[in-house]
Length: 266
Image (cartoon, rainbow, N blue to C red):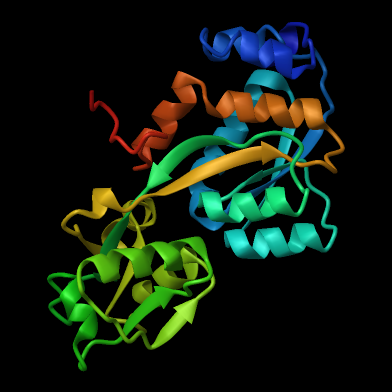
């Protein structure tokens, strides 16, 4: 039996917020002995691996089950606009979250939990000898990018424009995971992906850092949805994301802090 099931859960966001400065042990004190509560969180595709780990940690600490639905942020918003049931939304940019607010889908002001930046990724061995973003203009390079209407695509457009580069991608994808999939498979010679996705891919890809990439960040805001079945538990989960122990998990996965710093920077 986990320690989360051996103590009483208050079951409100006020408790989670009150213990945010204490850490996971403090949140454990708010856990139910036998909680059967479940929440559904819609989250950006680039969060999948790290959020699955965080979700397990949260369930262990609180007894509340978390069911995630991962997709491109724009796709998640479209599903919610069509009435898909969920309790919380975490997007890969502030613009998509603003659109959710404009559509009256969220019930409270969003909070930013992390940031991400882009790197160049190539298949293992870098067969096209990619060295920088300027190579995305080469006629002999098959590149793939996110579509500009999704967060990773908007950031890619911002970064390449700042570098004076006009890429001509062979395809534009609806999520960063789709871009990475084509790079992994060798269908593309290079593409722009989040640093966290490249890190998670390990030896399957080569990663090339981009000069001044830290000047171009996407931020990850989260908010409770207005139609949430379990708004208090959803708010508690979002409070959990801001705890130092969880921020450590995000940092290990390569995410930056909410203000754009890398872990350990002053």
